[in-house]
Length: 285
Length: 325
Image (cartoon, rainbow over all chains, first blue to last red; front, side):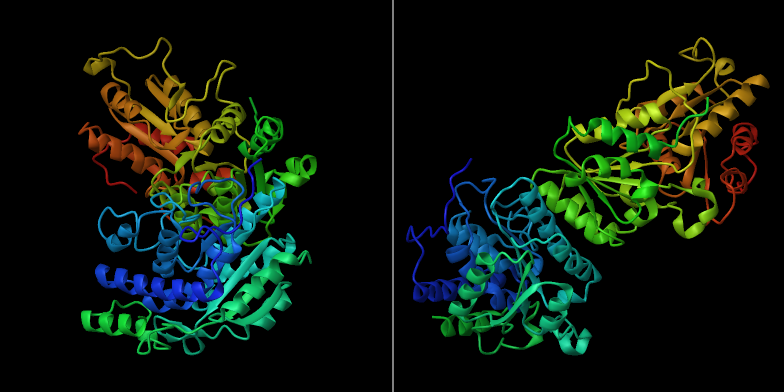
């Protein structure tokens, strides 16, 4: 009933070139760090690791319309690792879902830009998340509903690797292949870090590709900061009709783009101080 | 008159209402034989989802279905469903999704399967979630109407059902009203209002679900011994009918609550909260489980855990100065 729209690029009015996407992602990295600095708390590490994937999704892959956030045929994205919401907020604001000024109210009393995403307060948020392990189940429900209603919408879910320690994830990994949901695309942001340290030390979850294959998923493993590879992985997943759900294991760098944050679990959930922000923004200039 | 288990009435109701609610999707976690959804699954296979023994995922999938316009009705035993509280809290409660949680096999009434299968904390847990409506019908007629109301309502609902058969307690003209407790036993001619000291009822008994037949039996026994009591069926446990508590306080010497559930956080707490809020100064005697359950016949368990008609009679008459239990 609704006409389908392809990826929306509010600034250019059409999909930007890959080089422009990189610039856009770099600008949004600056937004992420600035909003967390302004808030005085938040999660920079896991936000910086997913921003490139989100950029490709919102400007190259997803069918969405910031003018109509409740468009019934839109593609859905569930950010299961809800603590990385500064990245999603930066993306939604740049895409035109809400004003960029809102970003600087992150985590402030009464703000629609909550510490973890709240679908009832902010347009563009498909599900309120933050309690880890829940997002893929919700995405499965969305994909099932889409199929029951014979809609062509696709559903994306971004999970953290530390998050996979939650048992509910594995219930969901069993369920999606059972229902043959090939319009469901899950992305694991494999940045190797979590609050208490490295994932491999806290509670190892690897080898992920083998595990997902054995559960019945179509799996690809990519560099989650290689824009071309990310785009190729989504294209391939969307084109294939294997009757299997798609899993993209994106190997990423926690804190990507800021030298002193990269691969340091200490930056999982800590706001930069003023001098640290300035140093980071200079690196991202 | 011997009636049906409320889970049976639920199973029939979802089949009857399927055409009127085309967005309804029924979900199971390997207990469809017990939760009575098999008839629906057989008749509407495209609208039935079997999720296996994985209730957390079922709750989340239901939330996702609801976010895309479906009305998911998910069933399991009360304890296994409410036991996934964290998922229900966020995916259903905080997301305010239009999810219908149906917990069957509530309380001690399941009998022989014993403690680990008895939901005795589900109401306390779910009552703390803002926006969650909790219904516990007491017979087949109430169940059918409650199911219809639940499907019409936009928002999360928890429907608590029994394994055991319950006598019909409502007349043919019964009308379900969410949020209202209704009288299922009372003195002929009603209660004089405003009451003087002598015409006050000995007690108003609030019961819900499996304890309603016990409370009615207790009412009859007390009536035969010359005491006037009224029995209220609390078919909605949350939000609670505060006006019914005020009425009970004004017309009764005491309030007795009886629930097949832990005495903390359920019906007894709801009534006490209403009484305290309005400073009604009426004693509230709360009967309910104070320990984990065990195996036995339902009647034996109701006796042992203090929620049988005999215990209710005693609670209506005993000297309140005596220490409880």
